[in-house]
Length: 228
Image (cartoon, rainbow, N blue to C red; front, side, top):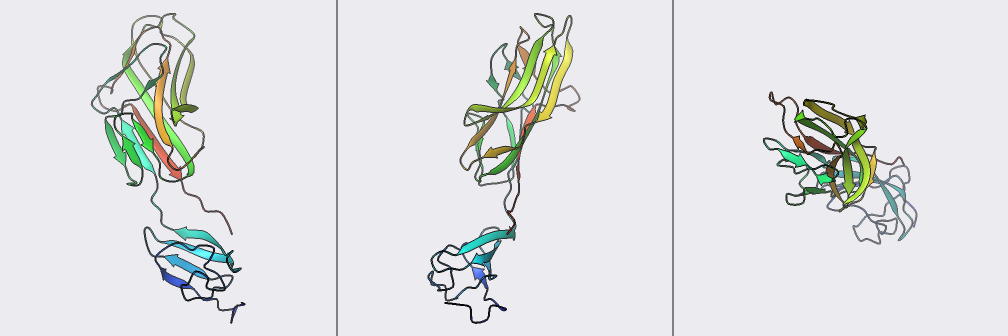
């Protein structure tokens, strides 16, 4: 079946679901519209997504999402008002005590300190740490401190990597901040941040006295739409 008027394709602006391959020129899906290439479909549910038909072949329609609002992962977890000991030479998950999570579809596990993401996409993780009174190291030089991103409990990237460090005597305020590479994360995957150090002594993470530096990690999903 061909469009009655391909220059004025029919649209569906009050849909209550996203289009599928049977929303086609034959109305196989039964919505009462014989769609044409270029037809628009607006899903009124959720955050409201706009789709455009690029192929309306019967039983094989192709709709591309091109716009609309979408709940985005914006997560911040911190050790606010708490301390955590990072033992020497041990990968230790950051024990988050305070959480800000803007997307209710993402879920936070307050026991294992893991964020489960709802949507597949590109994510970036940032983190920072501070140990206000740390040192001396043993040996005094050549030490490493890192903050690591774990996806499904497996290492994928460092956010912070400090190498060839050392504290010969006394104590200092020691810390670092950084971001991961852009990571492809799938729906249902878990994200956590862990820390490692081999300074020969335990490291205690804590806020600085003025509260200006804290131990945190955050996750942000990058929104993207593929061009037609």
